[in-house]
Length: 243
Image 1 (cartoon, helix red, strand yellow):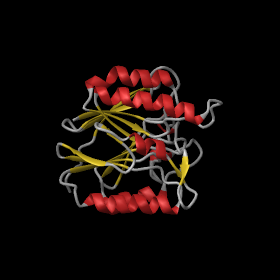
Image 2 (cartoon, one colour):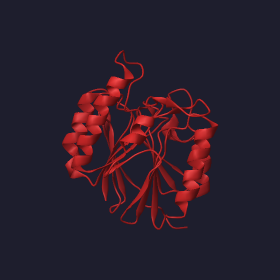
Image 3 (cartoon, rainbow, N blue to C red):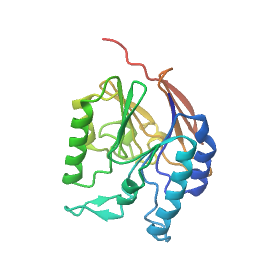
Image 4 (tube, rainbow, N blue to C red):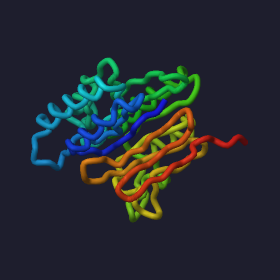
């Protein structure tokens, strides 16, 4: 299985077009949140309508996996936390969204929603507890924010990752966590696009302007991850040493 990962597109339609052009070459295309841009003057409902059309086109070309980010909320839960209800409603055949899990070969992929507070964090914890029972091989999480303490959470001044995610990684030991959210961490010497927490590989491709997003290609057979951006190109062996 080979999958193409990007995050933080923020309504950059040329980057959605690029993903459409590349999608047929991969078993999966994965988008790690922040499909919308709340800072845009364009109404969020209009953005959602256009992005939904792109998601439909992408799932016609390959299996598509999408989690929500902090820019994607259009509703509030009972605790007044942001929820991307539109994305959950978009789930379809070959389109896996917040709250979904599925198997591809011996790999189980779990799609986590954006955690905006205690209630949504509790929902994700319950999701991981439930899904852990179904893992037979490798476990991959799609989760918008990077973990606290990882190089993938470096802003240029400090680490601002997700402490809850770090705790869940240490508890469940997934093989891979794909994140985003901190746009510049791969582009700083102190930061990075890849890191390890115990036996878990964590990734953040970063965000760049232009027609092509920063991406990571993960090959689960060769066990490699390949980062490509305007700043460079790098390949990481992601096999876990025994012992």
